[in-house]
Length: 352
View 1 (cartoon, helix red, strand yellow):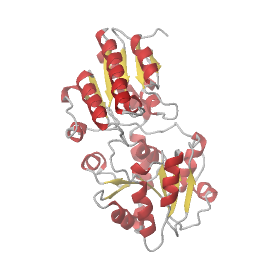
View 2 (cartoon, rainbow, N blue to C red):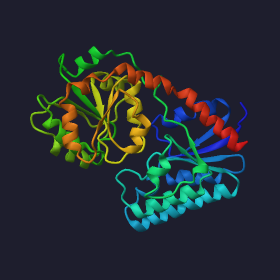
View 3 (cartoon, rainbow, N blue to C red):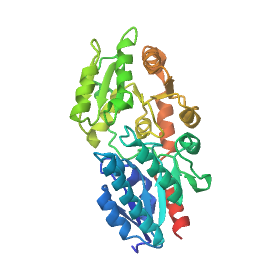
């Protein structure tokens, strides 16, 4: 197939299928995607791009947050700008997908915000997954509404194996009939609100649910989490990457997934839970309520008082009776290929 255009993608993580899902239709139409995960790789990719090509930027954390000092962070940010400016000067279009207003657990916040402001100005297209991202970002930087294109986050239908039924999954974890289980899935980092969730589970009455924790954790994060594990609560942990074949077991076994995040714009975990028909507990943030407020499979906790609010939810039988079929229906409405066609249409329109 003749290459229609090249699209440099940064960063493209092997363990995150989002970019693969987004680009399905574009690959079928002949676009060539050149992926990189490091700043050095981005520099090499950007140098190859010119008129008719595109540079699509996603998460910014690898640029600045991997620096050990502010000086190094500033140097890396400058290198990034030089690479992007070079591609743009040769005619390449610049796209930016806004996954987070500010990266989680930010180390060099001032430099990171400068980087976001640069991208907001430099990008030809700002891809968001909900309608009101400009309002959410406004306290930090301005987004030009004329640049914004909304393409929702796709579900993960067809991505992960899904042969294990709920009974077998619960049996693997030794969950008894009538025993409630809640799931936290993804990178296990205290900043994601795990401390509040652990405290809340211990306070849930009359009987604390079983807590399933699955995802990568560095040594320091693991030690911090272990120190917070409450007495009297059964906790099943897996501090490593979960193999694709095993993802289904965690989501099938649970009664509800809890996302106790302190700061969140979009969440792939929400869409992964829906793919397996698992209800979700979310922070009651204005932008999330606007996006998902009509979904009956979602419950909401108060982020101003997360421990008490989560404890109330996890002690209520109604939380564990949220309709699984509604979550599955939501997931099917966001089937990956249909949304990837919208992205391919965007490339067609902007790259000619």
